[in-house]
Image (tube, rainbow, N blue to C red):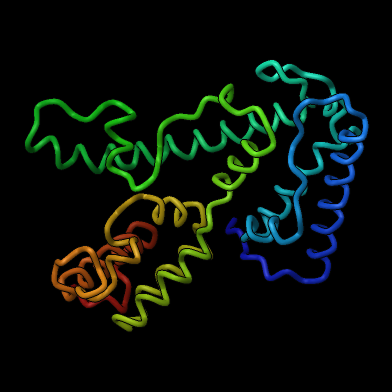
Length: 260
């Protein structure tokens, strides 16, 4: 089932407000106890709204924040050693959960890059790409596997949460604005909106793939872009790219694509 983009009605606002209030209150009680060396950081409505883009993500954040409560997770406040510091078990568990979620996503992206890269590399080299380091070099972001033992405090957990909730829609809107400013062919927007509505996880991976065609800079005019390939060629590449995405999920070309 497709995940619906959140529009923040009063009921959703109330749910988030209650989740944030209970989460922050739990941290305040731990601070006052003096029993812990490290704790999760408190959060805010503004920060949570910057993380959350869909209704599903709101429900997921409720669960993540709610797991700090003993009534939801009886061992949440148990003492645990994290690199020599006493921390609540909640912090260690959430770091473990976040790193595993991120690693799963990174692995999927590495496999996508590997398949694409080796389809070209096999024509030139005998040996295919194999290592994580080789694959991650093809991306515009770090895809190396995370190790949960490296993360020990609230700032680390905040950083992990930031990566767990990629800003797909925010980036997509900026991408669409740039496209309409420099080209105006609306079929690309139609494909992005179709993917956002029906395949949001796949759209996130597309925008994080590192492909030239999904980079906003690639859309710009030659004067503004670091890529000096003629703009008409780049725009044809972009339209071909998004038509291939549409074809993958619909089994046919988009009616607005003219095969440039």
